[in-house]
Length: 165
Image (cartoon, rainbow, N blue to C red; front, side, top):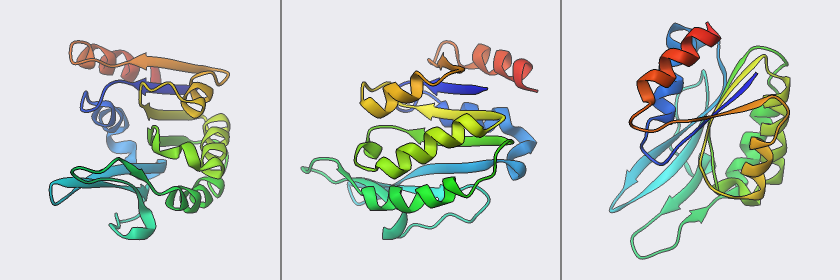
C-alpha cells in the first residue's frame, strides 16, 4: 500500500504522518526532511529515520536565502539514495517529503520509487507540483493520493488510522 499525503506547504502533511505512526515510529524506516532557519532564509536537511538529525552541508538538500533563487543540492539527495537502497523489503516506510528539489537527483528518485514499491506500507508526503518525478510517484501501481487541507485534516487522520492500524 502506498499512501501519498498531498497538500500545500504548512497544511500538516508531516504532522499527519507522525500522528498515524504514533508509537510505531521506532520500527519505521525511511527519512524526514526538516527546514531550519538560516538568517532571513532557510535550509532544508534530510535525515534517515532512527538516527539523530544532523545539520551539515552533507545532508542539506535545499536552501533559500533572501533575494536569491531556491537552490537544490542534488549531491545530498544522491548520498541519501544509499540509505534508501539499503532498506530491506517489507515493513513500514516514511518518505517525508517528496518535492521539486529532487529533480536533478535521478538515483534518489529511483531509490525512492523502488522503496515505496517494495514496502508493505509506504507513507509519503508529496508536494502538489507538476514535475516528472512527482507525476511518476503519483502514477505508481497501487498508489493512493490523499489530499489534505485545513478543513479535512482530522477526518483524514481518523479515516487513515482506521484503515492502517
